[in-house]
Length: 76
Image (cartoon, rainbow, N blue to C red; front, top):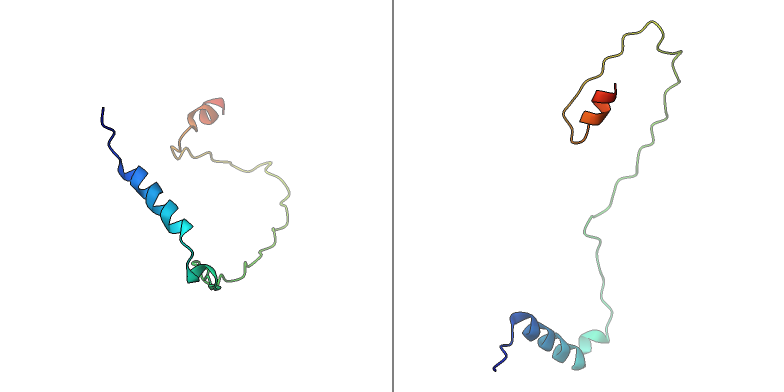
């Protein structure tokens, strides 16, 4: 029975051979850049003062049809 060598086996063999061969690239240092770039600082916004309450106010519940919200709306 013949065994066929797949692409994964060939890749592992290739990487094993490449890692066993000493190269000059392993001796030097490399500089790695951050692919996200320079991020701006996060702007902090303070929380507003708490209101007096909801007595006497009208409160609306809007069903936006998000996934798994049916049990919550049925409970209301």
